[in-house]
Structures are given as structure tokens and as C-alpha cells.
Image 1 (cartoon, each protein chain N blue to C red):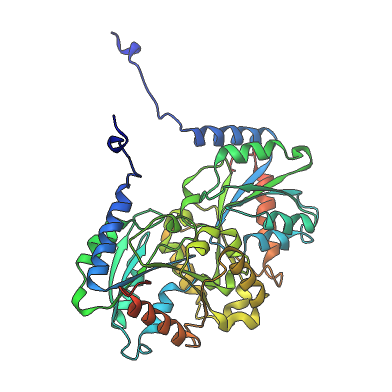
Image 2 (image 1 turned 180 degrees about the vertical axis):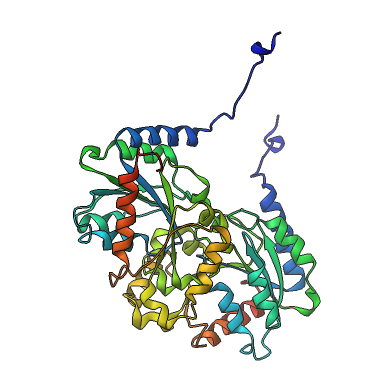
Length: 224
Length: 224
């Protein structure tokens, strides 16, 4: 057998990765940005999405794929204020899988959108391990959780394309030190942009929206 | 084949359940109470344990098996203030398993203890599914996470023998309604005792300690 006939086997993708790949192709073809928000239960992921409405200034139109173990509460919160949202229920599962996200995506009015935000199940561990075909994972961390979470749950923070630090209006009442938290983030991810904000008060939401808009603008222009 | 010869197969326990059973036998033989604290990252599980020191009033002696994905920060926090603690690292795993807990338990000075508290990995989903041989799971929920978490993560709250509601000192600064949270808890678990407390200020810690002491006292006396 000559060298040119050597059989080469590459990494075989599992089912989740295959669906994620389908999704990525679909998104790129349509120049749709998809972000995957990951954070603890109660970190303020839904509140962040609520806070974006009314501050978008026409920069982009977005829909939400809302992941939860049970209940449709979060999708209801979003629909109530005019956000296009679907509820993805895992029925006990600890993370969203790419296939369900792909199906839900196909049911969205994609022509009327520039951005899709997936809000994953509240969990700092498992969702970080599953590719949904998104252009970036976004770590959502509340200041009430303490400064050390990036070091204690490093996988998510290492992979994150951005960190949103929520509930900064509570800092005066907490033993929370911003510099210490930044040090913990930098330990696992030296470059990631960090957006400290208060969804409740509105402070800091605009720079986050700018960043999302810039990611959408950059799509298909070399660096995503 | 006569009826008396019919072969009967029962549920075969998986490896985790077998280790949990070993642990349960060991604990009962020694009249040791073991609790399994489960809550989100940053819910205040470690702070709760810190707050118990100095308020025990000789009611019981306890040690902690501290579960984390990475780092020994939490065990260090406890050892620093004189609590016997071991660190159990899952190295990426989203929950503690019974075998590691059993091994760590055997290395504790069991003769000098009445209570062992397992602090599980910060996660409201996966740890609820794994029996560690504990006498009870305790759900730790922070008021900063919002009222609806018991409905959104029902398995833990359904199984919990107690709910500890942490960080109540922050309620004045939050859109959190205590009655609404109690309604959500009651929806999934009608009877469970709830302990609202502030580990930082000390408020409400004493009734929680009383409950733990009563659970230890009740061991081996019919109802555990």
C-alpha cells in the first residue's frame, strides 16, 4: 500500500455536535448572530434580556430561545414586553442540546431578525460543555454570587466570548470587591470583555448592546 | 415449576446507590447525621456553615465534606475558622458521587462528631438526582435568585427535608416578595420547614441549628 493510500480517520462528531454544525451553517448563511447565555439560576439572564428592550435604538432585532427545566415563566416574561420568545423545556435535563435549539430556530421568523439569544438552563457547569452552534457563549455572573466563581467554575469563563456581571446596584450591600472579581476572571481568561451592569436600574446596559451589535456587524467579515 | 420456585428479580442498584447504602448503614450504626446541602453557585452554602460556628452552644460537633468542580477555596475558608473540612473535587463533574463521599467520610474522626454536612457542587439540577446516603437533602436558596426557583427546579425542592433561604438582609434592596417565594415552595413541597436567615448578620441562624440538632437527636428513634 503506497503512502497516498493510507486511510485517515478524523474525529467523528457526536449527534449534538452535528446539530450544532447545522445551526452554525444556517446562521452564517443568514448573517444571524446567535449567543448562548449561561449563568447560575437567578443570575439575572432573563432580566438582562428584559432590560435590552427599549434601549436597542434600532441597532438590531432579536428573538430569544428560553431554556428551562420546567415552567414557561421566563418566556412569558419576555412575550409580555413584546420580545419574540419560545420556551425550550428540558424536563429535568441540566442543559440545552443542539437539536432542540435547531428545531426551535427553524420556527422563528428568521428574515425579521439579526440576533438570536439562547438563554440556557440556570447552571454554571453542564451547559458550558455543549456546543449549540452559537457564535459565542456569554457568562452571566451576578455580584451576589461572590468574586471567586470564575475560578471555581472555570470551563465556562475560559470559553466565554463575554462576561456580563449583573446586579451591580447591590454592591454597596455586599462584601463584594470588583477588583478581586476581575482578578479571578483574568486568571482563567485574560482577554474577555466584561460588562458590569444593573438590569434593574439600566446602568451599563448600553455598552453591552453595543457589543452585541458589533458582533452582528462583524459576522462574515473575517472575525466573528 | 411450582409457584414457590418462581424467580424474582428486584431493582438492581447502580454503583452510586450501593455506595450510598454503605454510607447510610455506617451513619446509622454510629448515630451520625449527614445532610446534603444543595444550592446554586453563590447561594451562600459555605457562608451558612461559617455562620454556624460560635452559635452551636455545644449542641453538636460537625465536619464538612466540601464539594467543588475546582479549587480548595471553600475548604480553606472553613479550616481557617476551625471547622474540620475536606475538599472533594469533581474535576469538571457537576455533582458529588456517593463513592467519593464514602471514602472521605471514612477519613474523618467519626468518634468526635455528631453531624457531617456535605456541601455539594453549586448546581440546582444534577446533585438532586444523586443519593449520597444522607438523611436529608437541604435546599439552599438565596433571595437574590428570585421567588420562582422552586417551581423552575422542582426536583430538589420536592425532595428537600428543609429549605434554607439565605441573604434575607438584602430583601430591602430587591424586588423579592417573601410570600410569593413561600407559595412557590408550597406548590412543590407542602410541608417542608423553611429557614429564612442571614449568614452575614447572624439573623435566623439559631433556629436552623436547632433543627439540625433535633434531626441528630431523632436519629435511630423511629423517624429520621
